[in-house]
Amino acid sequence: MKAFAFKPSNKPIGKFEISSLDEIHSVFETFKKGHALSENDYIECKGSTWTVIKDQDDFKLAEGRIYMPTQEPVAEVNLPIVTTNSIPYTTIVSTLGLACGEAIMGANFLRDIAASVTDIVGGRSGSYEAKLREGRLVAVQEMMNDAHKNGANSVIGVKIDYETVGNSMLMVVCTGTAAIVEPIVTQK
Image 1: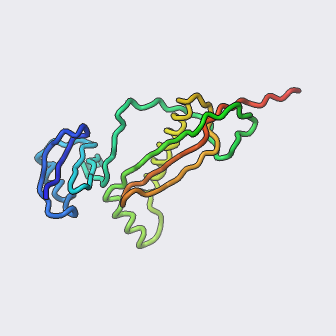
Image 2 (image 1 turned 120 degrees about the horizontal axis):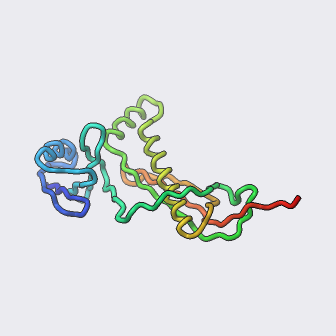
Image 3 (image 1 turned 90 degrees about the vertical axis):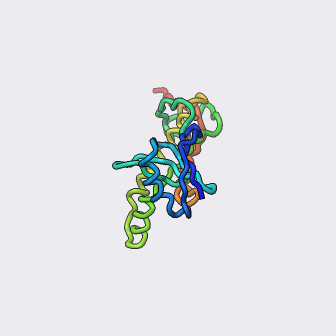
């Protein structure tokens, strides 16, 4: 069967033959020697997708398509966020609706192998924990940006959910209520 390599813009780079999806990583090593590849190029075959990522040594494949943002990144904002329905010493002037942030993170092939070993021998998987932390930080930042864009100066009732998508993608969703709060002024 044929596997096709593409630039992020869906511009084809080339194709190569594989006999099964299991050998996609090994054949990719040969393919990249003759083709100019860069980070976030991707490969498709039989409905499956792999994204080219850069690790410490070289380009590798990560299962699942990693979609790059099509617009300029929004400047990071820093709002007070709480899991409760109020912020101490403030009063809620108005609520502006739902604020959301999402992050889907690819867990690469090598991380899966390391996690499998950790699962067998016990202990913590530092690589997966780091990926979960990264996903949480991205989702929280996107939620704060969403709230700020709608005029909020805080987010209350924040909830963070973690899910898996497919076999090796981690999804983090962060939601809360965008709110305008003011400090409570006490008279002496």
